[in-house]
Image (cartoon, rainbow, N blue to C red; front, side, top):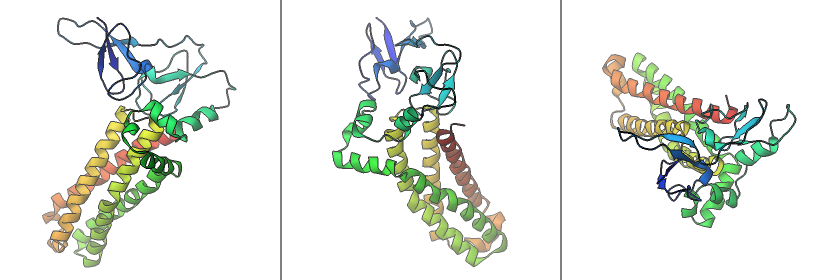
Length: 275
């Protein structure tokens, strides 16, 4: 009996052919790979795509069906350099002029927010009522996540700087500014995460690649640390009087928070600019 593995969620199906859709994540059968027979150590690994990639010329162009990245070559890359998607998620583009990056295809993958687009590609959205799906589509259409994420991305570096100066010089005004900036970030993060998940479903079909895993982990770290720091500031507003040395762990958490936000922003830039 052959085994087929879903490249999106890891679900394993037994049968002569892969299922039409993954019963776990709703991925199409083309996203299943045939697993090799189990060896003596009990391990198994993907062998070949469920549907073989067509042969192409050396200058053929392939589009990542997750993020829209365009690759030129006789075959798709093993992994998308932008979002980390497997080669089975690349599709061969039809012949077009070399100086054109298939604007219609790109717009379809990044701007399409219609109900059929979401439901056909991801089973995640099927659990929500129509009114919620319509709202999510409008948030994606009007760039809700990029707008929301600029709040913590812009305020967090300032909050870290104000915290450092407040602890270094024992400044009450800088401490107050740092405290309220951290509180603002804590209040903004739920909106950032919600709009991010909406974009992930609408624009990237809810597919879990390495890039999205990193972004989700970073978002969780920023949210958790910011809430901890906000509560810390509120519980001990005069901590700045004890100086930087006595509050080294408190400031270290600020630096970790900033690093996590920067990492999430860097991966977000890869998805937007394909670089």
